[in-house]
Amino acid sequence: MSTAITAPAAVAANTPYERSAGFWTGVLRKLARDPVAIGAAIVLLLLVAMALFAPLLTPHDPYQASMLKRLKPIGFENYLLGTDELGRDMLSRLMVGARLSLFMGITPVLIAFVIGSGIGILAGYAGGLVNTLIMRTIDVLYAFPSVLLAIALSGALGAGIGNALLSLTIVFIPPIARVAESVTTQVRSRDYVEAARASGAGAFTIVRVHVLGNVLGPIFVYSTSLIAVSMILASGLSFLGLGVKPPEPEWGLMLNTLRTAIYTQPWVAALPGLMIFITSISFNLLSDSLRSAMDVKN
Amino acid sequence: MLAYLLRRLVYTLPIMLGVAVVCFALVHLAPGDPLVSVLPPDASAELQAQLRTLYGFDRSLPEQFFGWVWRALQGDLGTSIATSRPVTGEVLTAVGNTLRLAVVATLIGFFFGCLFGFVAGYFRNSLVDRTASMLSVLGVSVPHYWLGMVLVIVFAAQLNWLPATGAGPGSSGDWAWDWAHLRHMVLPAITMSVIPMGIVARTVRALVAEILAQEFVVGLRAKGLTHFGVFRHVVKNAAPTALAVMGLQLGYLLGGSILIETVFAWPGTGFLLNSAIFQRDLPLLQGTILVLAMFFVLLNLLVDVVQTTIDPRIQRS
Image (cartoon, rainbow over all chains, first blue to last red; front, side, top):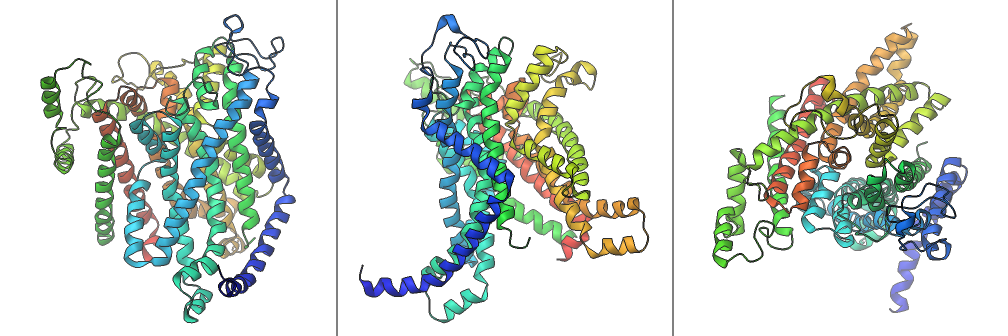
């Protein structure tokens, strides 16, 4: 790219960029003063670190079954959290399980954030017939309760990680697109967009310079509130046998296979669900704090 | 009002058609032959063709779709591939069981959600508010299938107070409001009520805080109204939105009950969906999802209409 083209773009992007940097610094400063946000963030960082370094941290081989050591209680010998129905170390499996569980919970929201924002911004900026066509199509998907749609899609597609991710992504696109559309519609009618248009800026430039910076924040905050739901749904699909397949460790699937053990080792059986709970509550608390930190009105 | 009703109804029709298209597409999205679960592996080509004609899979897609919609409108959702019984009957029995559970759960959730929400909204930023808000965050964050398991562990496996699974004596169609049946409902209903409780509590807390900050409340207080008198006005103003949220939650529970029903082996739509998925019984899958989604669309319509009726401000704006 020649310098003649890059230079004006950099100048044009400069002014709003500094403003938004100031805004985000303020948000971060507010978050840093919020003990709930700090706590939730630390828990999530620990979980992510545990997932990343799981192979280095696990005390036992998570796949190593032992017929003699099936369903041992918490604290049995050197099995800190007991063993599962095939005699595999629970602690190691919970650690390695964090990888697939977090991946399957976060990925659909990330992909849906990109696609949903794109669709919503297009609908909101274009307006008119394009808006009607896109939003009415979205309404149809919105007409299904999310759990039902996720299960119906992955049930029809068949079990597997890829199909579960695809179903969950489809479930999260409509709500994100709706939020993106409504925020974009608001921004589009602002004076500075009008001014940009009057001074000859094209649609692409207006969206890139004036719209994106103002709409991505709210869409992002809304999307973070979906991660907790996504974690519960993704593990729920595996719990039903529609997601991850054995012997891969994943919290939802582990919870399902341990259901037979609720009379023999109830507290070991409940552990994978506790992990899902801790993760989803941390995401919810962090998302709530982020929302109130970004709310300019307060 | 009538014009509004008609407009709302006309707007719902294309959505219903879209929902039908999605349900129909599910079957054709599914990989593999839809008849694979009934056909013996050594089935002759003749038998295959015969069954294909019987289930209508030999016709063109639009022909199949409109035929299916036409029959569905007359109450015929086809024949289950796995059990050879009419899908409509099976779905209706299951919907009845799920509806009972979901309504009870919604009422429990609504009651406690309102209680927590009002208390939290009235005493903002107090200890009570923080506790109530924490409870509502817990409610929306808990994986409900896990909560169900924990309740089974505590109240069925350890204490042996309540049954762990099933819907009581008799077959799945025989329900009675007696203790023999109700004791089976306690744990699943409590499990299910946690989600609407959290969401209702959050909504009501925000509503109450917003209403209390309005000028008319200050006016009422200045007029010398008692706390209870002011409270009545707050309730009246919060009711339409809170009721709307409750209605929508009922719809979500109907569609989202599959995980809870699996944990408790409750013979509802979730249970039916589960068996339809794992037996690859596509007409049953299609039919169950269609009925649930249509129910959800109609419930949305009903919520809108009721909300407009009891809150004239919406219609004017």
